[in-house]
Amino acid sequence: MTEPRRKGASRIADIPPDVLAALNEGREETVMLVEWLAIDMPTLMGHIAPEIGLADKTHILVSAAQALAGEGVTKRMRGIGQALHDVLVKHRQRDTVFERLATHTSDMARAWAAYSVTANPDVPLDRRLQIARRFAADRSQAVRECAWDSFRPHVAADLGTGIELLAPWVADPDANIRRCAVEGTRPMGVWTAHIPALKSAPALGLPILEPVRSDPSRYVQNAVANWLNDASKTQPDWVIGVTERWLVDSPSRETRWIANRARRTLRKQGLPA
Image (cartoon, rainbow, N blue to C red; front, side, top):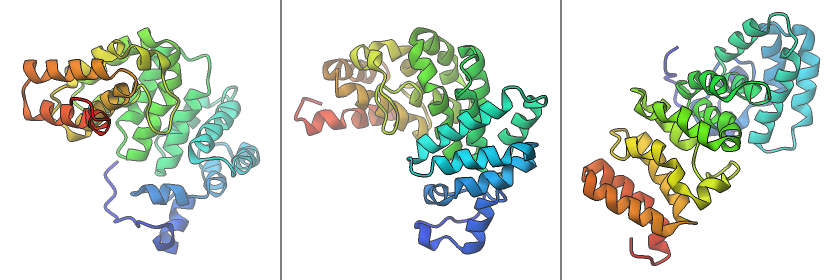
């Protein structure tokens, strides 16, 4: 699969009708967040379910998507993931159907696949992360965001094991994989539940952070800085100490950028940062 070359619209009203139709029919993937928000999920499900081998479950899945219409986009994604899990759990061709969903042209469909794994309580954490890895490396940023959100609650529930399993990810050659490990363990985040243990003891996350303190990718650097900025809201002294140590041990341009951005909340609060 190659990167989409189409230039996306910056407002829903500016999305060309033929593009919106293609998005809603699963023939095109989004290139901007606004396009993701413009998709009518019940309509998309109505097109995708028969394509992936769930024609007999189309009504159930479309009804589930319709019932979620009043929720925010993340709750709708998780809810549809739950509905997909419910119809797949005893399906005779479960793996085949899942693979069709996970490789669909529509990036939203691929994200649904990630959330269908979230909904399965019987998947061990190591296997859960193994499955999520493909979505963490997806060409679509929207799918990559859903990848870490799909496993985050399970990592938070078994934090020690989760950090141990994610630690190798930050040594991966793919910057998308490295970033996913960082984003998936942020103490707070913007649109996801907080991880109380990391808010009170952010040092638990050092196995994830230390290897990427001088990461060459700005995509990863920004995630590391945001992780530390989260931590600075509850443990400011710890963040100051870590960034000062990094600047001594690894005085690279990349580390300086991370440290400066990580301290932005501290500076707003007038703390020595």
